Image 1 (cartoon, rainbow, N blue to C red):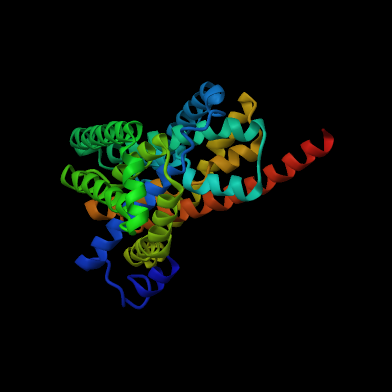
Image 2 (image 1 turned 90 degrees about the vertical axis):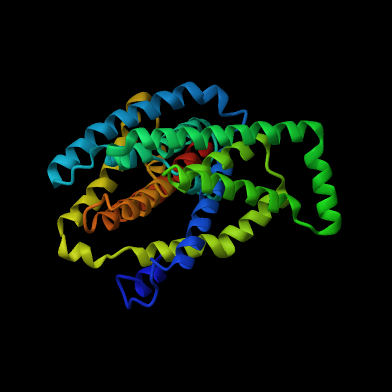
Length: 348
């Protein structure tokens, strides 16, 4: 993203985000990033089920607080996008949080309670974003979202039936023997078809990628396919998308519109505040801060909002500034949670 900022509209104008080929490849990268994020949601983890009820309660509490804070920020800044701000504040990024949990080796009841909360928040905010970002066309967005989710559900049922019948295993064996990468090709065809449906129904590609990723996670993604998709996404198309996003942003607008700096800071602080409120329900503050991490939702809001011309000058950059603050907060929360976990183990 920093490279895109330096070479795009903010910097030397070498990269042009409106180039059709560049934008097309960025769309593919975005779909893959959200697909991989969906596969990271631990829907098959049996530890989630006992904590599902408390996770739902915490997610609802955060959503209520987010609605209040989003409305207050919209009123204070004069940027009247309260529904969008509420969705951003309430969101959690499983794609960011789960790697932090894994890298720090966090375990115990705090993590078990955290997983369903972020899975629910991530899913609901991704579904709600198309409705919040363009309320004037909420009915159209709702219809498009329903079409994409319905198509993803059909794909899930078909893949599950193929898994149970052993068809997927047969394809895997033939593909591995003849080096066809057939599973990867099939997954990409399905993903691109869902993304095309999303574009044609005026819904963010984010929803198509994430919904398909959830379906694959529910069935169980083969390790070989996981490595292939990781290489394709992280090795080329994912970074290309973030370069495009950086090129699309015009951070010079923040200087011309100083209130947008305040908006970004307010959104980041509000995300942290909303996610520590569940301390009243027994969740430790470090895990609340960790849950505040945002990525996919603000990226989609900045991308789609810019494409639809529904954001004010500098607002897209403010949304990304808020996301960066939330990531810093989550990293600090992860560090605190690691120390808390270590002290708990030492006491035990």
